[in-house]
Amino acid sequence: EVQLVESGGGLVQAGGSLRLSCTASGFSFDDYAIGWYRQAPGKEREGVSCISGVDDTTYYVDSVEGRFTISTDNSKKMLYLQMNSLKSEDTALYYCAALYGSSCIDLPHYDMEYWGKGTLVTVSS
Image 1 (tube, rainbow, N blue to C red):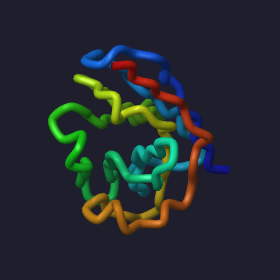
Image 2: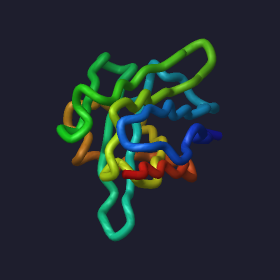
Image 3: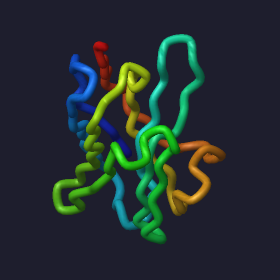
């Protein structure tokens, strides 16, 4: 059974940093694209970042490019999102998600197969 559990959210001041973690189980990173989505109040969910074990591609939405870094620790089955220079508009519920056999090139158009329950990030201005 595939399971994804997020952690690391919290309250941070604008300009600060947070690292989100996703503990994965039930699948191999080599066979999946795994990434981060977020949903802010009153807004649609958006794909933030992705990394694929299938073809080694990565994806970042333009608004986080240069500030966020996605990484994995395959031995621990962990996915991370290092978030630096946080802005108030980064406030959202962040989800970990996975899709079998996929690249990350076209993340906004993917229907991810598995989802965690989310971790809340609040950035105060």
